[in-house]
Every structure is written in structure tokens, then in C-alpha cells.
Image (tube, rainbow, N blue to C red; front, side, top):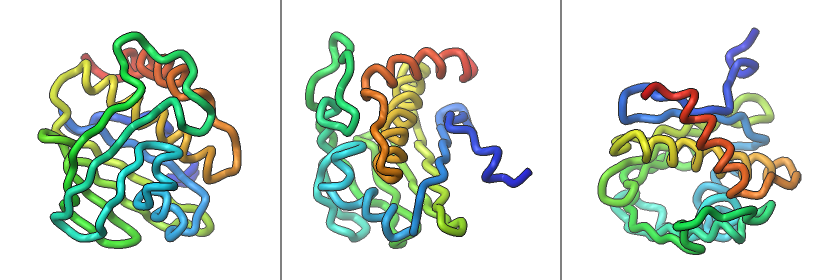
Length: 177
């Protein structure tokens, strides 16, 4: 069995405050890179925000989960229709690696590895503050990557919040306390 055949869609803690999640996506790598870096594409699966492609460049991510492909679903009470976060590019090696700050505390790295006609996306989110945030972030990345995978395959994803709520419970059972 190949490594790609055994990729689990769920993220895993590789250190106490570091989540790693992988997805095999339809390529080529330049196509997937565009969906990570171009605001008009990224807003369909994650968050909008123009990025100047250079190390040190600040940018803002703007989440509007109700506008994602597949629709919003049942948005939980206390979660706003829009969320904004300031970030900064910390590493850039187009079209294979993008790293950026996650607000004031964390860092996200996305690596793209061509695998024939597909691309292995490896996302590592570092310095997650605590277990409640680990569950929210794990379910969040998982649900957003579900939307990305569906978009790249020309499919309709599950409504975001419905998927996120289910996944949050899954992560609570799967990740160590």
C-alpha cells in the first residue's frame, strides 16, 4: 500500500500545540497554488484577502463562511458572519511552500508536493494555544479543506457549518486530551 493510499483526511497532533493535516488534491501544482494564494479563489474555500507575494508582506484574511461553496448550513450561536485576521508572509517558495503568521500567536505552513497528476497538500499549524482552539482549528482546517477538495474536483461540498460542527465532535474524540 502506498503512502498516498493511507492519507487520513483528519489532522493529527505532531507536537502538543502543532496540528498536521494532509490532502491529496487534483493538480497540477500551479493550479493548487493559485487556490492558496489568489484572493478570488481562496475566498471560495477559506478566506479572501489580497497577498503580495513576498516575505514580510502583511495581508488580511476575511472569513465569510456563509459564502463558501456548499453554503453556510446552521451557523453556531456566537460565531459572526464575518471574521478578520491580520497575518504576514514568513516564507515563500512558489509554487511549493507558503508560510504565514496566524494572527499574533500561531503560524501556518502549506507545502505542495506534486504526485503524478495530483498534489499532496501538507498543512502544519503551529503554536495552537489550548485544547478548545485545537478542536476549533482542527475542525476548521478540515472543513475548509473539504471545500477546497470539492471545488478542485468540480463537486458541491457539504454546508460549511454543518460539517464543522460534526468534525469538531470527531476531533474531540480523536485528539488526546
